[in-house]
Length: 454
Image (cartoon, rainbow, N blue to C red; front, side):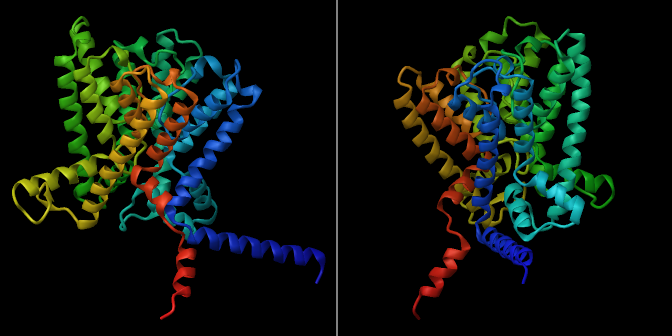
């Protein structure tokens, strides 16, 4: 056999072993490793001199890369002032990849070429988006890519017209950047004060809100609407109904509360006051993280409302974070059933399956554990920060929200590392992150099973 043939055979064996190894790895671990690999690449690119307008510390570059991939939006340095166009482009690509989800872009390319997904990609895609069995992963990936790019293109055109009218410098780039950031619920802004300069601009507020809501409500509901539009279904699925009702409920009651109780809004004109109350509710609910009013200036009663909205967060299979609206609905059903003494948990007159109940309760428990541990550590590393400021930062990082009461830029090196870990956990999914750390690969389980003497 020739040396060339031997080398080719050896390469095929290596690839076969690699595919087998990936096939035995838990999907949760693949997701975590995948996101971490994107963060590492982004960190390397943002550390290049060509990416930096002025010197950025290595830890800050890692923080920004993590925040972009996790679509959080917390920043230790101003992206618009510290990075060149190349650096901003890297951040935008990281946001896009993070918003679409691990393996989505690669899976779309494979579907275009081969028209099918490998077993590993199919399994990981289902885990990433928590897809029901009746939704085909390949069709879902195509729908996600097409819908995302369409929404972002329309949003960018609308923002370009609005930014141009306001005299924004480099309006085209600013429009593209903010459209992608909004749809991916990343909250990254090229403006040093986020969107505070556009507080009374109805057009900008509504375009950003529409993009954020479309991304946060989740791709499952889009697929559901698509099926209805083309007559494949005659009604929305149960999950879609929960997402719509819960999202509208949070937006209505959150806006009403902020409009009534926030003292800082009372000096604003009525229309601007309502717009500001709605936007800050929307940005917490969708976990997009933009703000049109300084968060540190809000009253503690409003901060408490935002706490709740950030913890619940967006919807499954979307770009937002948090516990998810569906998990909250399941927990509400559990509480109601317990108060009424029922053995069966129901929500909107529908029985909640045991596996959904288990997932929701496990997610809440693990979330509270991470919250407590992170609070304990940050209160030690940031002794000068107020309790509510630290708690806001932790909840914002865990929910990939990106809002801050001003602590992010003053974090110590250890504090930044803690927030980095929380942002990764929030993007992978609180429960998925726990599973990734605790799960054993199938190959190891098989080896242990083979070692058992019967």
